[in-house]
Image: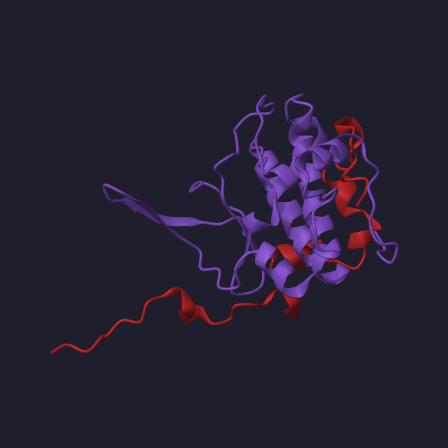
Amino acid sequence: MGKLLEKDASKRLGKNNFNEIKKHDFFKKLNWKHLAMKRIRAPKELFINDNDSDAFEPVNLERK
Amino acid sequence: MKKLGSPFIITLHYAFETPLHLYMAIDHCPHGDLAEIIVERDQLKESTACFVIAQLILAIEYLHGKNILYRDLKPENILIASDGYIKLTDFGLSKENCFAMSFCGSPAYLSPEMLEKKGVGFESDLYGIGTVLFEMVVGEPPYFDENMDVMFENIKTGKLRYPSYLSI
């Protein structure tokens, strides 16, 4: 994490190419191809506000 | 925005305007943005951060491949779609060139080179990925301080501190 937040931009991780970051141990267990194909199940922690209808005003569909 | 094609970047499906407003129809993202999720959960597991940051890397790699700097990476700009995957949004600040000499972005997420007004390059987006990762696993942005002068000074010269239980 400190290598991405390196203050000297010329020494920052990923400066030469993104593979420098992708090969980091943090992503050791990740299958990048499966991720790009969305074949990995997303972590439950990311699911909040699951009630879709909250964003919309109720509409009365009945016509007189 | 419309011509971009990455699964992790928001798609503009349709836009129209009225005299007062511009309307844009984008992908449906019912789980809100990453900032809301961090507030709700305090901080996220490293495995969750890995899942999100990896997609962010692919999205930024895609943009850089098209010679676009994102420049304003922060959790608010990362929406979560119905499948739990990310959609990077808000291209108000992105520029189609390599070296933008301007002061932009949100205070807590500014990179040291932005604060030094040295201009920003592709490396500033790498720093931005780092700030999002930090906030996901720590719960607040790096060097966060309510006093903005203190925060800016720490971004430029302070030592990065985070809990020792983190593996990264």
